[in-house]
Amino acid sequence: MRNWSVFTAKFGGIEIRIHFTFLALLIFLLLTETARGGSRVIPRIFMLTGLILVSVLLHEIGHAVVSSQQGFPVKGAVLLPIGGLALTDPAVQGESTRNLRTEILIALAGPLVSALLAGATAVVFMVMGSIRNLWLPPLVTVANLGVSFFWINLCLCVFNLLPAFPLDGGRILRAWLAQTMELNQATRRAVTFGNVFAGVFMLAGAAINIQWLMLVGFFIFMAAQMEERTMMFQSVVDAVQMEDIMLTEFSILSPADTLEDALNKAVHSLQDDFPVVSSGDLVGIITRQTIVDRLRAEGNGYVQGAMSRAFEVASRTESLGSAFRKLTSRGLSLVPVVDEERLVGIVTLQHLMHSMGLLAESKRLRRQMEDQM
Image (cartoon, rainbow, N blue to C red):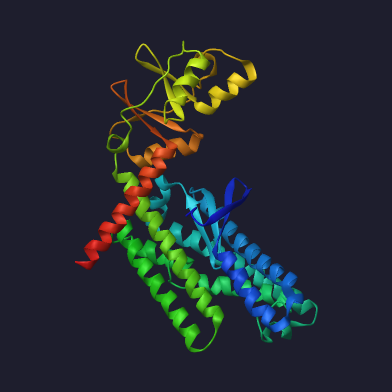
């Protein structure tokens, strides 16, 4: 999901990322609104895009709060103009999806937030005596940002209730399907529903010349593909074992090595991370950058004084997904693989990401070939 998105901030421990489709939305608004109002409306175009972004962010915060209350904390969210895609711990994601009641509560939290925002905006217009302005077209326009905010949130609420995965209604559909079938199969069927809705929106928008509908269809299609790839990616990493991808030829260091000797070995190695082994036992981990930093700051010393003793190990039969969670949860860059307390291989974060990407792409290509047969 992180592809084609940029990190923007952390909110309550949740990593917030903005997907490139917001750039597509901004370009769309610049083209359509400047054609009507000229260059003078450009600042208001950015303000309108900001209102959509804030509305989506609040929508996703609603999901995140309820998800955490249900015991499934959200680690991050990728924001799209139609909503967001949550990044949760893969170890518990399947459990939450199979629990229909939990998934319904989490899914409805976002539309509820959007409905409350729309309702609060309507109350403000009512107090000001201009409630009629909410129904005067155009509904979403740079000319009246208050009216636009009302319709943005009302549309976020209504559209997300449609059974078009990965919209919130589509997530409820997937959870319902997962009651009687395997999760990956339920996801694929829900994605099919999402693609159908995306196609209908794009065709309807083209037929009746409503560009917003075409844009919504495009966003739904993009989000559905992202979710499907994420699920496929997860199914791959949980099926592959460490012994299938671990590096068996690697360099090691000794605690008694000097940092200059370690740097010389690092120069002649493609590794960025090195296991530190004493008498056959793994005693620490040291990175190429740590070696360089210590030499610069303190001069030559010993590996023992610079190595980190905080590391995780994995067994040969442990899943790729498990190793990935160990690396990311503790901010590590290397996982040694042991067999009967003997170091038999290593997996680095860079190597792991490369392997997972290739495995997921391989599975996708195999599935395409099976569908064509």
